[in-house]
Length: 311
Ligand code: RUB
Image (tube, rainbow, N blue to C red; front, side, top):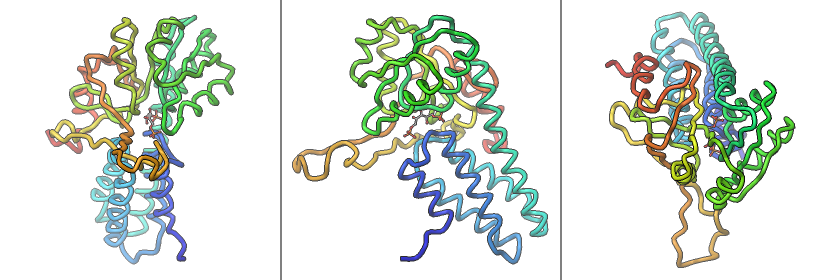
């Protein structure tokens, strides 16, 4: 069997969720593009073509988190802008732009951790779903700032990303409670949850949130119990495509993640990986630019993605 290329390995790792979480997926993808720059090529045009083919493959690896196309399209935009440069110069400029872009995402995460920690109060009980690096950074920062918090993690079936959150939080010394996904409503009451804090795969122009399956049910429970439902996300996860009317594709994953193949031969098994939470259930969105209401998503998009939107 022939050895997989570096790019194919990255695509396979994202598909298999060895690399997961919207931000990590985006940063891993642009780093793979940086390595494409180094492959043999006689002129700039052939690298531009290779980058564009790589972008297509990377974007097809997982369909829902918009951070992936946003990041990859940005690198393609830069490559188009610089395509008249001699090959050596093109490589140098693009590679440093990619590194700058990846570093900016790290900085955005750090900034959000600081802003997010300010929204947390001493004694808060916070419920989170799945595993968002952005949420983890906020919780760890709040804890480090001396806020005595307790975190409730859902399992997040079928892939149990909640276990990753539990490991991270307990590793930082934060008191943590693990619940099954269907115990959210009961636990909110029993554990006196003060806030829900989740990450994002995509934020649409109308402020709707797309995140791990089950998020929208948690938002409904929070609304019913008058608990703040807060989203933490880098601006990279806002969708310019949604401004142009596109609907975000919800990933359907293999049903073997839910039940072994052939167990219920006459049953249609479904495995949607994400769902949509209506903007009206969201109290605020924490971004690296500060805390905004979901209704401000369109303005942030125009500001941030002007280069792509051409509006
Ligand atoms: C992960 C998920 C996370 C967001 C945000 O889904 O829904 O909440 O991606 O994560 P999956 P982050 O496990 O299917 O990738 O803040 O790390 O970008």
